[in-house]
Length: 174
Ligand code: NI
Image (spheres, protein in one colour):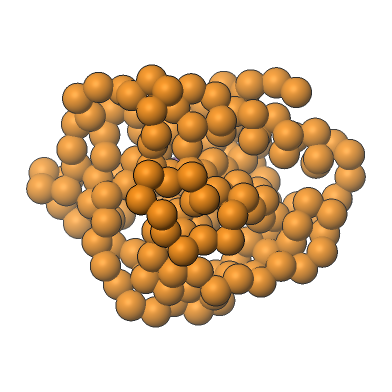
């Protein structure tokens, strides 16, 4: 296992479109283990996406089970080739990102989604998600399409906020 380097804005690799995973092999499992170790390193993030460590494949990890305020969630999820098939409702909410360490931002997201994906062995997965978990999934899947939350704020002046302190060891959003 290894802690991987997290690419930061404005690294152009963050803007790439990631390719679907087609081989569910030991190499994939080893990468997912590294990605998870990287997510948990430092200020543990609620989510991480493969392109954030420079691997342009459609893989994300989210875990909303340890947020400060409890939220409805499906626990620790490794989602390979995730796809949102249904969106419902919209609300703004504050987001952060390991690739944008100095800012948080208000982003409008669907409040409920239906998501299909594969697990690390290629078996199909399906979830109805709401609220914070739905937001985390939308944020991470955006990474697979080369989108960062800063690309989604309505107004950079009104909706982006400079972080005062980078909370070492504290909880971070997304
Ligand atoms: Ni992010």
